[in-house]
Length: 327
View (tube, rainbow, N blue to C red):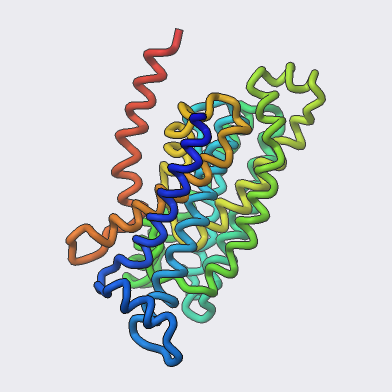
């Protein structure tokens, strides 16, 4: 019964979030004007705002949020660590480094899709490196991810340190803050196929995650191929989260928060957590993005900044709660 109510609530929340995201912006237009502009035979300002600015931003928010929520649920089940999130395996940092390389060398100025393409490539390289180093087990995989993240962070620092001019440094810094603003249909069309491919990899390992909740030896005795499971989880995370990060920049804590907030309604079976986490992650990103537009500041608050401000207290609360529950 609780799962049915949860599905209904998530559907209503997503529907309301999509409508609000299409209607709300820095430039206020009545909903009737937006609808008339979208249906008009000739292009109008309202139609252009709706179709070329708000609609791709909304769709990207849905896909990015679903990616972060799903990958967070998978990694928490795979690593059996309630603090696991998509950035743990170095994929997000690798994608960020690839996109920053495009900005640093001016490739993004001459080719608009250079940053997403190199971001996806960076995520795949980081994921491959993490898997190659961390094949010994779960703990080794976590340590390898931390090492790859550190290496990518060093590369980001070098890019900022040796930025060719202040404008490049500003562009890199702004991009790293994370945002859905000013994204277009070309970027959406480029990254969505990678996200969908990543979802496919992550969604087929639900049974393996259920078995892993009993322990690695018990999972192997049930016929689970742990190497294949880790490879699918890492490949799915690299494809989906890497594609998301390559376009939006770093958006933290969604992958950590979403699974924990829906777990009380679906139980602790990992396979039952995947879809609700994806839906709630999409809703979280949409709500956070709408909030960035409503905050009355001269410059729009970046989405990654807002999610960090909200997610950090939750992270502290989770650590304290786990410490109290620990034997």
